Length: 244
Length: 353
Image 1 (cartoon, each protein chain N blue to C red):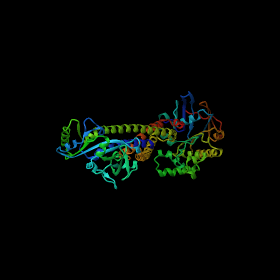
Image 2: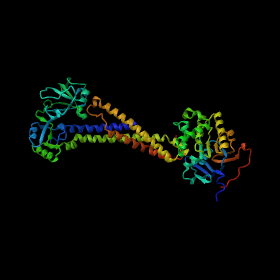
Image 3: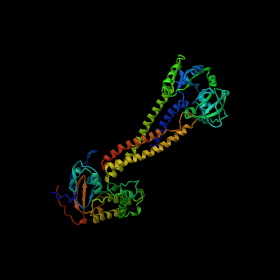
Image 4: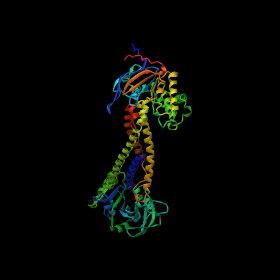
């Protein structure tokens, strides 16, 4: 019989630890969290608290020193093709955008699609649709350095959506943006969550933006300090326990 | 990349041209047997009695005997670079076989203090037919004609009458050797028989079939060795340069590899992309390098100081070699960092500066 938690939780971590050998720093220490499918979660905490490390573990960008990350109930350590998982299930948005500087906005959005069976014409059509979705349809042929930082992040979000992921993992996506651009990005995230029912895991330093999520995980010194529903949920009740 | 390919193509090409030109001197003469002093591997130091030619001519099967004297002289106009001077009889088939450019003529036995200049030497000296040139210390010779030869060395040489060169060298009645044309060019046995009969004419005579002479002469061996050494050095320097360029260029892209890995590109796709780029880069480097090498050898070949020493024509095989090396080293140089970059965890690659 299938584990009943399998589909309920999209991500789950079990005694997750990450020790960086240089300097013996515990970036993560015995972290146990679970994120439900379609949930919008903000992760907060001071620099060095382990937020990015946790996000990287969830997104299979890094390997834990101990413990396990489960995605849809499957342990990541047992999944052979993590590239395919990242390509088809996750969309990543980084603080510094990580766009390829020699490619136009339209080309950057197409990059993840090379791992799909889409033909060139379909890739272009889809990339145009995604750029239109993020309000960048008028800047398709611009190189990243010809775009404002806000526009770059919108292109990066369009790229993250290229293969219709079920989870959007964003590491301080507003960190380099002015307040207006940041507001635009957060509005876009809210739309993706409500209209596409995407699971969103957002790292932010901004309390105001964090409160737009359903739930806020606060971290300190590599550990989870608190894990509560946000004011948006208007509930202060503890989260339901999850089976480990 | 282009610089390294250019260096390899130019150096290997120059070395190859060096060897090719030297062989062409002997091949053009179409002689079957070369006769020189026994134990001497360089024509320059060989001394034989000119009268020996008449005796050789009487051997059955010998069609023609050409005597010749060679020396190197220095010309003020060319600085320290020596110029090859060949002394031939006016009626020598070698003289008759010269490809004289329009406006000039061959030397005749009636000529006094006349000479022929190789095409490249004439350009270096800025001389044309009718101009005068002071050689042999203070003797003034008139340019009777300018000749073209497939050998860059002959193009950089001059021809005078045998008697003039004998007088200058203080070797009256002596020659460096004889070039013998037989009636049995294709019959090795007959050629060997004639060689034995020539050698029986005196103790210090050595007669060798041309093909053997070409392979055994010290000049050719030296040129072979030089070509090989130069090529190997050029290859090593070029390969190391190219390898370094490729490794550095891919290492610098580790962060980009991290981005691609993060958004789900498979390792295989990333390695394939980098290798394809390396192939294109190598081919572009090959084209630019070959063009640069052609321009360089052409430029060097036209310099007076290098006249008669560098063949400006690059053999197609050398250019192909340049491409092959560029491609091989380019792919090899890209493969390791591409593999290494693709093996890194995406987070490690993204952290790379």
